[in-house]
Image 1 (cartoon, rainbow, N blue to C red):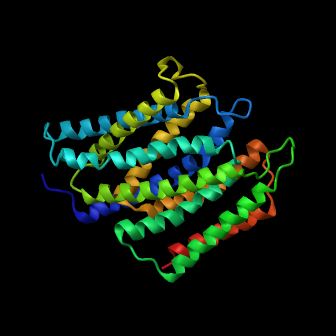
Image 2 (cartoon, rainbow, N blue to C red; image 1 turned 30 degrees about the horizontal axis):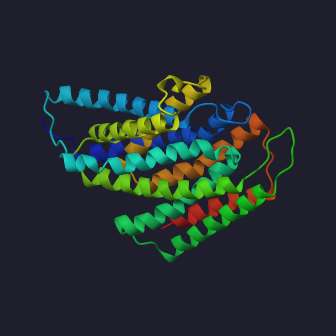
Length: 317
Protein backbone atom coordinates (compact mmCIF):
# COMPACT_ATOMS: atom_id res chain seq x y z
CA UNK A 1 0.00 0.00 0.00
CA UNK A 2 1.55 3.28 -1.14
CA UNK A 3 1.69 6.21 1.31
CA UNK A 4 -0.45 9.22 0.33
CA UNK A 5 1.24 11.85 -1.84
CA UNK A 6 2.48 14.98 -0.08
CA UNK A 7 0.24 17.23 -2.20
CA UNK A 8 -2.82 15.14 -1.24
CA UNK A 9 -1.92 15.35 2.46
CA UNK A 10 -1.45 19.12 2.28
CA UNK A 11 -4.74 19.51 0.41
CA UNK A 12 -6.63 17.46 3.02
CA UNK A 13 -4.93 19.41 5.83
CA UNK A 14 -6.01 22.74 4.32
CA UNK A 15 -9.61 21.56 3.98
CA UNK A 16 -9.56 20.21 7.54
CA UNK A 17 -8.34 23.55 8.91
CA UNK A 18 -10.89 25.38 6.72
CA UNK A 19 -13.67 23.45 8.45
CA UNK A 20 -12.19 23.49 11.96
CA UNK A 21 -11.44 27.23 12.20
CA UNK A 22 -15.03 28.58 11.88
CA UNK A 23 -16.27 25.81 14.20
CA UNK A 24 -13.60 26.79 16.72
CA UNK A 25 -14.61 30.46 16.47
CA UNK A 26 -18.27 29.67 17.26
CA UNK A 27 -17.40 27.37 20.17
CA UNK A 28 -14.73 29.67 21.60
CA UNK A 29 -16.96 32.73 21.29
CA UNK A 30 -19.88 31.05 23.06
CA UNK A 31 -17.93 29.65 26.02
CA UNK A 32 -18.04 32.65 28.38
CA UNK A 33 -21.67 33.27 27.37
CA UNK A 34 -22.62 29.68 28.29
CA UNK A 35 -20.83 30.03 31.64
CA UNK A 36 -22.86 33.16 32.37
CA UNK A 37 -26.08 31.43 31.36
CA UNK A 38 -25.29 28.63 33.82
CA UNK A 39 -25.06 31.04 36.77
CA UNK A 40 -27.60 30.78 39.58
CA UNK A 41 -27.93 33.86 41.79
CA UNK A 42 -24.89 35.42 40.15
CA UNK A 43 -22.54 32.51 40.85
CA UNK A 44 -21.47 29.42 38.91
CA UNK A 45 -23.29 26.58 40.76
CA UNK A 46 -21.01 23.68 39.87
CA UNK A 47 -17.49 22.74 40.92
CA UNK A 48 -15.21 23.87 38.09
CA UNK A 49 -12.88 20.90 38.55
CA UNK A 50 -15.69 18.34 38.19
CA UNK A 51 -16.80 20.05 34.99
CA UNK A 52 -13.25 19.97 33.61
CA UNK A 53 -12.90 16.29 34.60
CA UNK A 54 -15.94 15.55 32.44
CA UNK A 55 -14.52 17.61 29.55
CA UNK A 56 -11.17 15.80 29.73
CA UNK A 57 -12.89 12.41 30.02
CA UNK A 58 -15.03 13.13 26.95
CA UNK A 59 -11.94 14.13 24.96
CA UNK A 60 -10.09 11.03 26.17
CA UNK A 61 -12.91 8.69 25.12
CA UNK A 62 -13.09 10.22 21.62
CA UNK A 63 -9.28 10.05 21.26
CA UNK A 64 -9.24 6.41 22.36
CA UNK A 65 -11.93 5.53 19.81
CA UNK A 66 -10.00 7.27 17.00
CA UNK A 67 -6.73 5.61 18.08
CA UNK A 68 -8.40 2.18 18.27
CA UNK A 69 -9.84 2.64 14.78
CA UNK A 70 -6.36 3.38 13.40
CA UNK A 71 -4.84 0.56 15.46
CA UNK A 72 -7.23 -2.07 14.03
CA UNK A 73 -6.87 -0.64 10.51
CA UNK A 74 -3.11 -1.17 10.72
CA UNK A 75 -3.60 -4.82 11.65
CA UNK A 76 -3.08 -4.38 15.39
CA UNK A 77 0.40 -2.87 15.02
CA UNK A 78 1.23 0.03 17.34
CA UNK A 79 3.96 1.79 15.39
CA UNK A 80 5.92 4.76 16.69
CA UNK A 81 4.85 4.29 20.29
CA UNK A 82 6.46 7.00 22.45
CA UNK A 83 8.73 6.00 25.31
CA UNK A 84 7.75 6.59 28.93
CA UNK A 85 10.08 9.59 29.07
CA UNK A 86 8.43 11.05 25.96
CA UNK A 87 4.97 10.49 27.41
CA UNK A 88 5.92 12.48 30.51
CA UNK A 89 6.28 15.57 28.30
CA UNK A 90 2.49 15.64 27.93
CA UNK A 91 2.02 16.02 31.68
CA UNK A 92 3.29 19.63 31.50
CA UNK A 93 0.60 21.07 29.17
CA UNK A 94 -2.00 18.86 30.89
CA UNK A 95 -1.20 20.53 34.22
CA UNK A 96 -1.21 24.00 32.64
CA UNK A 97 -4.59 23.38 30.98
CA UNK A 98 -5.88 21.98 34.28
CA UNK A 99 -5.12 25.31 35.95
CA UNK A 100 -6.45 27.44 33.09
CA UNK A 101 -9.68 25.54 32.49
CA UNK A 102 -10.55 26.17 36.12
CA UNK A 103 -9.43 29.81 36.01
CA UNK A 104 -11.77 30.54 33.09
CA UNK A 105 -14.82 29.59 35.16
CA UNK A 106 -13.91 31.85 38.07
CA UNK A 107 -12.97 34.81 35.83
CA UNK A 108 -16.63 35.01 34.74
CA UNK A 109 -17.52 36.20 38.26
CA UNK A 110 -15.46 39.36 37.81
CA UNK A 111 -16.15 40.57 34.26
CA UNK A 112 -18.74 40.46 31.50
CA UNK A 113 -18.41 37.94 28.62
CA UNK A 114 -17.43 40.54 25.99
CA UNK A 115 -14.65 41.98 28.16
CA UNK A 116 -13.40 38.46 28.83
CA UNK A 117 -13.13 37.79 25.11
CA UNK A 118 -11.41 41.12 24.35
CA UNK A 119 -8.91 40.69 27.18
CA UNK A 120 -8.30 37.08 26.11
CA UNK A 121 -6.45 38.53 23.14
CA UNK A 122 -3.65 39.38 25.57
CA UNK A 123 -2.72 35.74 24.91
CA UNK A 124 -1.07 37.11 21.78
CA UNK A 125 1.46 38.88 24.01
CA UNK A 126 2.34 35.78 26.03
CA UNK A 127 2.27 33.55 22.95
CA UNK A 128 4.68 35.86 21.14
CA UNK A 129 7.06 35.89 24.11
CA UNK A 130 7.00 32.11 24.55
CA UNK A 131 7.42 31.58 20.80
CA UNK A 132 10.57 33.66 21.09
CA UNK A 133 11.80 31.82 24.20
CA UNK A 134 10.84 28.20 23.37
CA UNK A 135 10.67 27.90 19.57
CA UNK A 136 13.18 30.73 19.01
CA UNK A 137 10.96 32.47 16.49
CA UNK A 138 12.04 36.07 16.05
CA UNK A 139 9.54 38.91 16.01
CA UNK A 140 9.75 41.93 13.74
CA UNK A 141 9.50 45.50 15.04
CA UNK A 142 6.01 45.65 13.49
CA UNK A 143 4.92 42.63 15.52
CA UNK A 144 6.30 44.13 18.73
CA UNK A 145 4.35 47.33 17.96
CA UNK A 146 1.23 45.18 17.44
CA UNK A 147 1.81 43.61 20.86
CA UNK A 148 2.07 47.12 22.36
CA UNK A 149 -1.28 48.08 20.76
CA UNK A 150 -2.80 44.94 22.21
CA UNK A 151 -1.64 45.96 25.67
CA UNK A 152 -3.23 49.38 25.12
CA UNK A 153 -6.47 47.64 24.17
CA UNK A 154 -6.37 45.69 27.42
CA UNK A 155 -5.79 48.89 29.41
CA UNK A 156 -8.63 50.70 27.62
CA UNK A 157 -11.17 47.93 28.14
CA UNK A 158 -10.10 47.42 31.75
CA UNK A 159 -10.34 51.14 32.53
CA UNK A 160 -13.84 51.33 31.07
CA UNK A 161 -14.91 48.19 32.93
CA UNK A 162 -13.56 49.36 36.27
CA UNK A 163 -15.57 52.58 35.94
CA UNK A 164 -18.90 50.93 35.03
CA UNK A 165 -20.39 50.16 38.42
CA UNK A 166 -24.01 51.30 37.98
CA UNK A 167 -26.81 48.93 38.90
CA UNK A 168 -29.15 48.48 35.96
CA UNK A 169 -31.37 45.72 34.63
CA UNK A 170 -29.03 45.38 31.66
CA UNK A 171 -25.53 43.95 31.71
CA UNK A 172 -22.79 46.54 31.34
CA UNK A 173 -19.12 46.37 30.43
CA UNK A 174 -17.63 45.61 33.82
CA UNK A 175 -14.21 44.42 34.95
CA UNK A 176 -13.17 43.78 38.54
CA UNK A 177 -9.56 44.15 39.70
CA UNK A 178 -9.60 40.50 40.80
CA UNK A 179 -10.74 39.59 37.31
CA UNK A 180 -7.78 41.47 35.83
CA UNK A 181 -5.37 39.60 38.10
CA UNK A 182 -6.87 36.23 37.14
CA UNK A 183 -6.93 37.21 33.46
CA UNK A 184 -3.22 38.11 33.56
CA UNK A 185 -2.36 34.70 35.01
CA UNK A 186 -4.77 32.99 32.61
CA UNK A 187 -3.20 34.59 29.52
CA UNK A 188 0.36 33.81 30.65
CA UNK A 189 -0.45 30.17 31.31
CA UNK A 190 -2.45 29.91 28.07
CA UNK A 191 0.43 31.29 26.00
CA UNK A 192 2.91 28.88 27.58
CA UNK A 193 0.56 25.90 27.27
CA UNK A 194 -0.25 26.64 23.61
CA UNK A 195 3.36 27.06 22.50
CA UNK A 196 4.60 24.06 24.50
CA UNK A 197 1.78 21.85 23.16
CA UNK A 198 2.56 22.82 19.58
CA UNK A 199 6.26 22.15 20.25
CA UNK A 200 5.80 18.59 21.55
CA UNK A 201 3.11 17.64 19.01
CA UNK A 202 5.33 18.69 16.11
CA UNK A 203 8.56 17.42 17.67
CA UNK A 204 7.17 13.87 17.39
CA UNK A 205 5.43 14.06 14.01
CA UNK A 206 5.77 10.29 13.60
CA UNK A 207 3.36 9.72 16.52
CA UNK A 208 -0.32 9.89 15.56
CA UNK A 209 -2.36 12.82 16.87
CA UNK A 210 -4.92 10.46 18.42
CA UNK A 211 -2.22 8.74 20.51
CA UNK A 212 -0.74 12.08 21.54
CA UNK A 213 -4.22 13.20 22.58
CA UNK A 214 -4.69 10.01 24.61
CA UNK A 215 -1.52 10.81 26.55
CA UNK A 216 -2.44 14.47 27.03
CA UNK A 217 -6.01 13.82 28.17
CA UNK A 218 -5.06 10.90 30.44
CA UNK A 219 -2.88 13.31 32.40
CA UNK A 220 -5.66 15.88 32.17
CA UNK A 221 -8.23 13.56 33.74
CA UNK A 222 -5.79 12.58 36.50
CA UNK A 223 -4.80 16.17 37.42
CA UNK A 224 -8.37 17.46 37.43
CA UNK A 225 -9.64 14.46 39.40
CA UNK A 226 -7.06 15.19 42.09
CA UNK A 227 -8.14 18.85 41.96
CA UNK A 228 -11.77 17.91 42.44
CA UNK A 229 -11.07 15.64 45.40
CA UNK A 230 -8.96 18.38 46.98
CA UNK A 231 -11.48 21.21 46.49
CA UNK A 232 -14.52 19.12 47.45
CA UNK A 233 -13.02 17.91 50.71
CA UNK A 234 -12.81 14.35 49.34
CA UNK A 235 -16.60 14.08 48.90
CA UNK A 236 -17.22 12.26 45.57
CA UNK A 237 -20.98 12.50 46.10
CA UNK A 238 -20.84 16.23 45.27
CA UNK A 239 -19.33 15.60 41.82
CA UNK A 240 -22.47 16.44 39.81
CA UNK A 241 -23.79 19.02 42.26
CA UNK A 242 -25.01 22.15 40.45
CA UNK A 243 -24.94 20.53 36.99
CA UNK A 244 -27.62 21.65 34.54
CA UNK A 245 -28.38 21.51 30.83
CA UNK A 246 -25.99 24.44 30.38
CA UNK A 247 -23.22 22.47 32.09
CA UNK A 248 -23.73 19.55 29.70
CA UNK A 249 -23.56 21.92 26.71
CA UNK A 250 -20.35 23.43 28.11
CA UNK A 251 -18.81 19.97 28.55
CA UNK A 252 -19.65 18.84 25.00
CA UNK A 253 -18.61 22.08 23.26
CA UNK A 254 -15.37 22.45 25.22
CA UNK A 255 -14.44 18.84 24.56
CA UNK A 256 -14.73 19.45 20.82
CA UNK A 257 -12.92 22.76 21.22
CA UNK A 258 -9.97 20.97 22.82
CA UNK A 259 -9.84 18.40 20.02
CA UNK A 260 -10.02 21.16 17.41
CA UNK A 261 -7.16 23.09 19.02
CA UNK A 262 -5.07 19.93 19.22
CA UNK A 263 -5.50 19.33 15.48
CA UNK A 264 -4.61 22.97 14.80
CA UNK A 265 -1.43 22.72 16.88
CA UNK A 266 -0.43 19.52 15.07
CA UNK A 267 -1.22 20.58 11.50
CA UNK A 268 -1.31 24.38 11.80
CA UNK A 269 0.13 26.71 14.42
CA UNK A 270 -0.65 28.95 17.39
CA UNK A 271 -1.16 31.77 14.88
CA UNK A 272 -4.39 30.09 13.77
CA UNK A 273 -5.43 29.72 17.42
CA UNK A 274 -4.90 33.46 17.96
CA UNK A 275 -6.99 34.17 14.87
CA UNK A 276 -9.80 32.06 16.37
CA UNK A 277 -9.58 33.94 19.67
CA UNK A 278 -9.68 37.29 17.88
CA UNK A 279 -12.62 36.32 15.67
CA UNK A 280 -14.50 34.98 18.69
CA UNK A 281 -14.73 38.56 20.03
CA UNK A 282 -17.48 39.31 17.56
CA UNK A 283 -19.43 36.14 18.41
CA UNK A 284 -19.25 36.85 22.16
CA UNK A 285 -20.21 40.50 21.81
CA UNK A 286 -23.22 39.77 19.57
CA UNK A 287 -24.46 36.96 21.83
CA UNK A 288 -24.01 39.14 24.94
CA UNK A 289 -26.00 41.97 23.37
CA UNK A 290 -28.79 39.61 22.32
CA UNK A 291 -28.99 37.50 25.48
CA UNK A 292 -27.96 39.93 28.22
CA UNK A 293 -28.75 43.31 26.61
CA UNK A 294 -25.08 44.18 27.08
CA UNK A 295 -24.45 47.94 26.96
CA UNK A 296 -21.15 48.82 25.31
CA UNK A 297 -19.12 51.92 26.16
CA UNK A 298 -16.56 54.02 24.30
CA UNK A 299 -13.65 52.23 26.00
CA UNK A 300 -14.87 48.87 24.70
CA UNK A 301 -15.16 50.23 21.15
CA UNK A 302 -11.61 51.64 21.39
CA UNK A 303 -10.29 48.33 22.72
CA UNK A 304 -12.12 46.37 20.03
CA UNK A 305 -10.65 48.58 17.31
CA UNK A 306 -7.12 48.39 18.75
CA UNK A 307 -7.33 44.60 18.88
CA UNK A 308 -8.33 44.41 15.20
CA UNK A 309 -5.52 46.80 14.15
CA UNK A 310 -3.02 44.93 16.33
CA UNK A 311 -3.92 41.53 14.87
CA UNK A 312 -3.72 42.82 11.31
CA UNK A 313 -0.24 44.25 12.00
CA UNK A 314 0.92 41.15 13.85
CA UNK A 315 -0.03 38.72 11.07
CA UNK A 316 0.80 40.98 8.11
CA UNK A 317 3.93 39.88 6.27
